[in-house]
Amino acid sequence: MVLSDEIARKVLTSAYDTGDATNLISAADAAKGTMYQVTIDRENAQSGTELKSMSIGNTELTINDKNEITGTLNFSQTISASEAKILAKGHFATFELSDYAKLTDGTVDYFSDGDIEGDGVQDTPDSYNNIGDDVTTSTSGYWGYNNYKFLFVRNNDADQSVTVWRISNDTASGAGQLDTANTLIVEAEDRLDDAKKTSSSTYTFKLNWAAPNEEAEISSFKIGNFNGSIVNIAGKK
Figure (cartoon, one colour):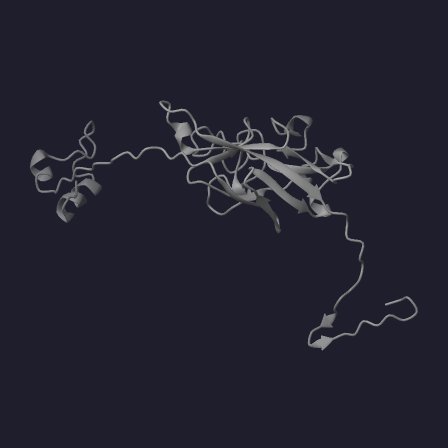
């Protein structure tokens, strides 16, 4: 209902406040307003299960027709097995899914760039329903969502392969391998419809790690408007 200015002012100034009937208006005044009926049609839940893209920092990964997530990570993006319980070594992935789908490993859900609310701000990693973070109570809009990073553990094999872990804090219980080794699942929007079977697709990480860059040189040097020269003299620069 849209009320005229006169009637709306009465409501806002508590002219209709009678104790038990706060902000109620008379039938006569209501008749002066315009009543609209809102009709919302429900669309069927979407069934898209595509992982369209994924990157780790500046490293773009490739998703092939076998649903394999492939690519070579920089050495600095990977860790040794002994570092697999250090939160600071983890990475949020940037990814795009089918509309309204979610990315999970069967137990843990993942958010692109670690942004739970979708407001462009990275949220704190945790496994405690965001208690103590910006979302603190069960009445908050995103209470109940955990926020995990990925860890990329180097394997010392001929392929220089990578095993993918998840981590939410620096405790032993906060880190571990994915539910199924190196596997993620995209679940469609129809997961929210109890009358339908959830549509899903499985994706498998097939990652490698690059050897560390051993170059230690300055390629350019500048102070203000002065461009310096780098000269190699007797093995010294």
